[in-house]
Image (tube, rainbow, N blue to C red):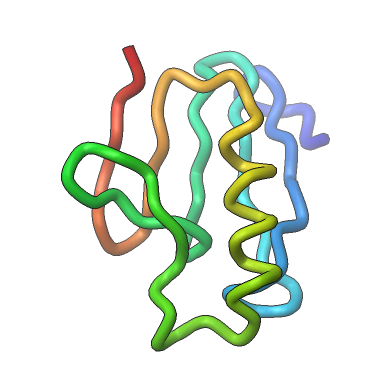
Length: 84
């Protein structure tokens, strides 16, 4: 946990790459997914299979990401997905 910006939790989500992490901003409840997830047609989907080292592990990591209580997701290549 980083003690800045209301608390930032770094979460290990391997699959896209072995050491991939996401950042959960506790105060705003925003999940910064990097390349671990993408936004597609208004929903959160997994990492791009072409650029993912272990698809099975990436799918497990996506479920871990989705288990958090969020107001939105930020995916590196595909933008912001607000959750209502």
